[in-house]
View: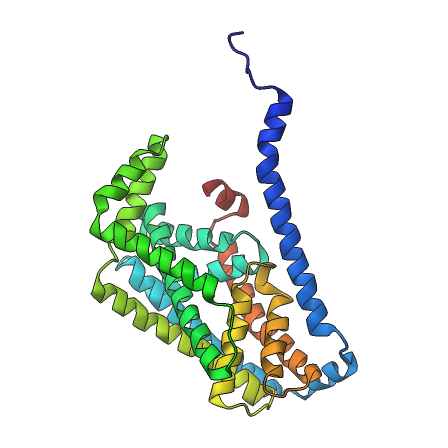
Length: 332
């Protein structure tokens, strides 16, 4: 009949059941990962010894590391400002970086990346496609750095870290970028298959913005800025394990701890990687003979140092930005 749907309610429910089932399975897998990591980190641990180890950490060292961590925010802001163009200054780039990190630390689904793109766009007056292209290059540069770090740590520790899936994904993205650079007409034809004109226009603009960074000079400059970001992060970990916790680890051991804890943060799990970070750090420190109670105390303190300042600052900037979680979800 005209004006009525030929699809029955049962068929509609079945059609929507697939995505819902995948979402629930994904959540169940993440929950299982978090619980497994927490069990590994806390199993057989004397909590009194963990507390005693935490009490021995020098508050001056903690304050100094937090202060040094602020420098990493400025370097990340510098990289975002450079990627965004002259319309975005150092403060605006740092503010957007903090908003992204703060939102990601408390809200799942990586809404912080969307918040970062929207914040940059509002500040500089450009569209969402340009903002998302900036975030893409920032995140892709970090994934490449993490991959290099993982391979380096594998060599340093004599253990094979699980970086093969990441390597395959990175290679696939580089392949897609090569196709975009060498045969833009091919990607244009693919975009033409998108049924919605609005989505076609957005995809074409996004790819054009991404292609704008595809030059040897810009990629080398981005690699240099990214190396500075990750060098700063590595010094924070070195200060945490050697100055704060007093483990006196060698540079090779610090590299392994930094790599394994960073890989733990990258695994999709809870906001802020609660549980996963602790398990990864305890595992890495155990490779160098650190007792489990001391390793867990260090992991908890390291996570709080890396989590609390950026979350407080990021959410403060987010609250004053005029953005909202509901609005970000609608923009996806």
